[in-house]
Image (cartoon, rainbow over all chains, first blue to last red; front, side):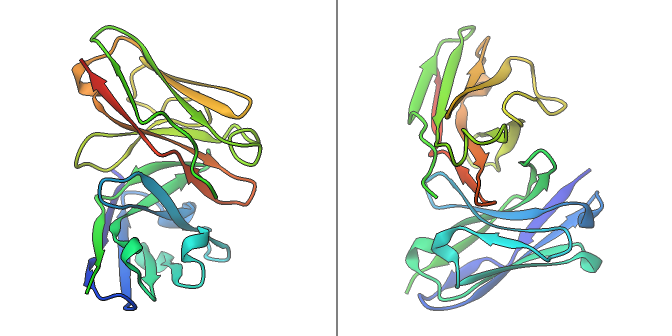
Length: 118
Length: 110
């Protein structure tokens, strides 16, 4: 069974940093592109970033470019998202999601909440 | 990277059919057959319902179907059941190698 478990969320002040982790199990982690998707309270889903199987390609939504960094460690079956220069509008549940070859997100974690507030 | 356009809400009675539209542009929905749909009941993570416009993953009932015409994709749910009440989101891969989601549609089963 595919499992994705996020961790690392919490309360952080504006301008602060946080590192999210996603630990994968039940599949060969290196097979797949991986993504982060977020959802602000009471709002819709927003794709944030994704990373190629070997980490050589990374893409970001414009609103986080230059502030967030996606990375992965295939040896540890782990996906990461480094959040820097955080703003109130970054407050959201952050989901880790597996990308299948058909360009869809077929498995999601339970999410980790990030709150940016003073 | 503008969000795809979905109606905020739709409703239907048990047994009826409803259709949710998802309108994008020639840079996303119109460029590829890489449109997917997700169901999100309150307080839970999203679940993949449809991929590549009209394909269902194993375990998704055939009451859920997808289609596309030009820059607009659609999700149809037939034989509505109370358990279908949830938020539904479309998503499309884009020509910039990114993804974009729709704003979401709340389905109410009357």
